[in-house]
Image 1: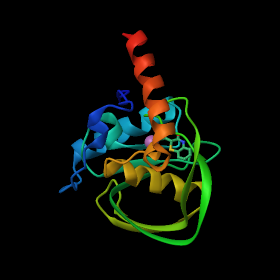
Image 2 (image 1 turned 180 degrees about the vertical axis):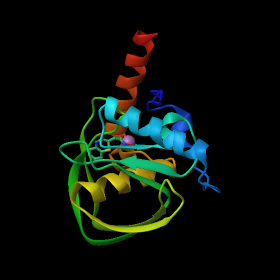
Image 3 (image 1 turned 90 degrees about the vertical axis):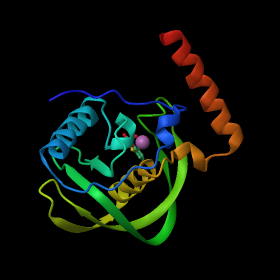
Image 4 (image 1 turned 120 degrees about the vertical axis):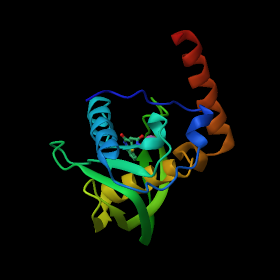
Length: 167
Ligand code: GNR
Ligand code: NI
C-alpha cells in the first residue's frame, strides 16, 4: 500500500474530466486500496481519483465516526432529490478553507463496487453531501466554484503563496 500525493487548488490537473473505468481489475483494486489509505491518513471523509492525478471515475468515502464504513464507487451516477441545504464543506485539495455549499439532501448512487458488481445505494446526510462533492471532482469541479469569485480568488492567492514558501 502507499500514500498518494494530493493535488491542490489551483493545480490545473484538478480540472480534468475523468474517464469511465472499462474493467475493474487488480490495478483498479490497488488504486482503490491506496486511495483509502490516503483518505484515512489525511484525514478526510472522501477522495476522488482526480485528486491523486488519476483521471478515472473512482471515488472512495467513509463518513462514519469509527472510520470503519468504507465505500468505493466506480463509474458513479447520481440521482439527486429532496430539498437543497447548506453544509460547511472542506476539501483536501483546498486545505484550510471551509465554506457553506448548497447540495441536495438525498442522492441515489448507481455504481460498480471493487468486485465489478453493480450496486445502488440511497444516501442522506453527510454521506449524500460527500458523494456529491466527490462526483464533482470527477467532472473537474471544486467546491470553491460555488463561491463568489472574490472568495475564490482570495483562496487561490493564499494557497499560491503557501505553495511558494513550501518549495
Ligand atoms: O474530508 C472532507 N470533508 C468534507 C466535508 C464536507 C463536505 C465534503 C467533504 S469531502 C473532504 C475530502 C475531499 O476533499 N474529498 O474530495
Ligand atoms: Ni474534495
